[in-house]
Image (cartoon, rainbow, N blue to C red; front, side, top):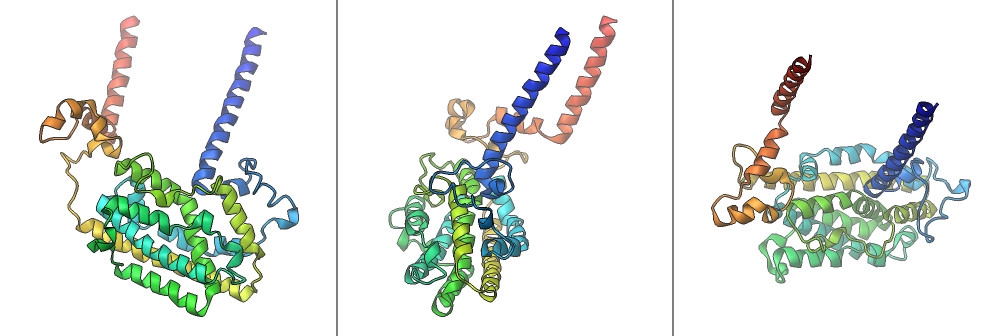
Length: 350
């Protein structure tokens, strides 16, 4: 009976722990992926009061005819294509050089300068007024701070701040639709701002770690939205505003088409950055083992502080060994050795 009670208690404990883990994982996914986690019912809504009643009425739930759903479904292929470009995949792995990140910051500075200029001009347009959140979303000022940190206070005179060919094409497209069809700016605002509130937060952590940028946020202010207390909640609000715009089906379809064009413009930027990455000299590497496997701060390594700082080498043997031990072939050899050792121990006690 006591064993049975223990068994039941253990099962309850395991269930409780599993539910706690699922809850924590859902919260992490919500921060990384945005409102999709809440929309799919993985966790209950914990949105702040400003956003928590957006979809209480079942009639307000998004439908396939709503612009937010049309954009979500209509850009899936483009989104996947952009995520799987070599540059983005390398970036997420931590394979990013400071020079390239500086150029990325320059490019998006020009893009946001153009987009926010047009949004300011057309802030009273029926399609854009519901989506105009300058205090919460404006990125130009943050990007200027980042460029001042990355390139120096005279960054405007820096040779690298001229727009590249792909950047110029992107900027020209924004200004062109601003002159002729401002409603299409919805596609640009939706794609850029909601992307920055979602995956951009993952990229921020990658950049800070790999480029050893200050934890206080210098150099990556672009990714910070201090006026938004809940990214997921704000995106929910933004989508509800999209659905409330008085646009006919034809215009909604054209906005989806323009959003796909925005993804393609970004892909052209990524391809440009990838070529620059290839042209830059490779980082120092000894026997193919990356320093710290791309993790940690070399200046905080005890070996480097005690030995490497006074020598020409900054490769820490301890971290090199850790990387080596993670190699599949080495893991296999160690596993086989462990099995053989266990047989020897069993034989000894027989």
